[in-house]
Image 1: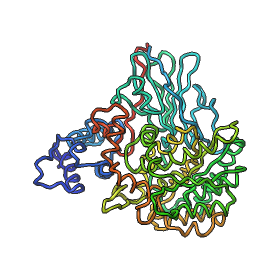
Image 2: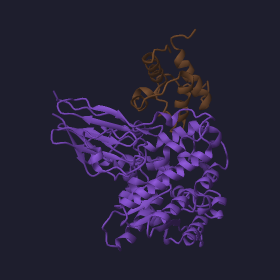
Image 3: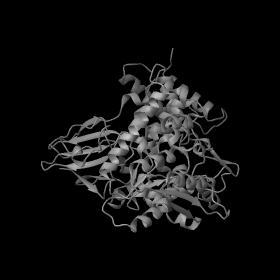
Image 4: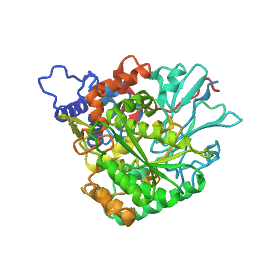
Length: 91
Length: 440
């Protein structure tokens, strides 16, 4: 069963694996800006979008993609839940 | 009541519906929504009753941005125009690509119509048309499009940007077949090597074989970088791969404008390019220079990468915008055949020789064998050692990604360059549909 924070965990797991973020990296958290902190670059965000489509079956609309919300793990998780709820699917 | 106001001019339209080029009146309020539209198009039209139509083509080849002022929705083809009109860069949005917005009088919300083809990014099964059939469709589309273009612009001076690669060579063949006296234009960067690049030699040979006049554009680094601010503003991008290509285009545009000025002008000057085939065929790769990697690509399967590259056409105006700065009208014929290109299956996109294979199926013996057999060289890279091109020239001068971003930010009055991450992300501009306020 998915927990309340299941989406965040899945996104974090992908980011850590894809962008070599060490488990010992104390700067990484769900509420930091993953772009400004340099964890994800302009190439990486394309890979992140592909992951979200594959993992959650969502296409992130442009207004969400360019929003401040899309800059953190917590924000990305909220967007995914919203998109899945709008399409009648639980996160 | 907030009105719509166009700031500056728009880029030219070269869109067609599969049979004819669109006319300006096709984009007026009340005209049928042009759902078959392919190629570059943008329109902001007003009717006497206060209605407006705003349109942008489905690939986002032509650009359109907007921001609100106290009295109006300001729209412009370049964000810099809106900044100069007093808008904050953070408030600027793109009109979404593939969008027709109809503002009717006394209604704040526009009626939205989509021009995007759902089939473009859906999975293509092996039961679809064969590659040979798709090549036939592309050939027929290109022939029809060039015929329509030549009919409309029969008096236009025509130039073809000829790198010597397959895409531009194909366009050179078409130009030769449809226009009276097209001129092939070839770029080379003089970095003191004392010999022309392989690209230049091939372009010159092909122009000779096709019977095309030839315009040699060899520039030094000083002349190349003179256009850097123009490239950043008109190209609407700071990312190195696009800036490098745009610098090449600026050098070509400057030379073409000088050459065209010698002729009496009764028609716009057309510049035909082989753009977009690389995106459609996923024909990009990272480049290495002095142990650093440039032009990195997302690690995706070919069809997903193609989707990403085609979405990315929304951003950067390195061709249309940069040539427009010299008053030249860019035509990208491969855009007309986008449906056929995007029907190519994943299995084909995985083939190492997909580009020459498809080009051969399209152009056959109309292109000489030595063009098919060439190893691809990017114009901005310059040669197999990567040391003769714009990439190397930029890297050697310290014009790296950070510098380009900072300069773009300065030119658009953005205090914190990191804010630009909110303007382009994943190859897409920050986009939204404008609404009129105070309308009731």
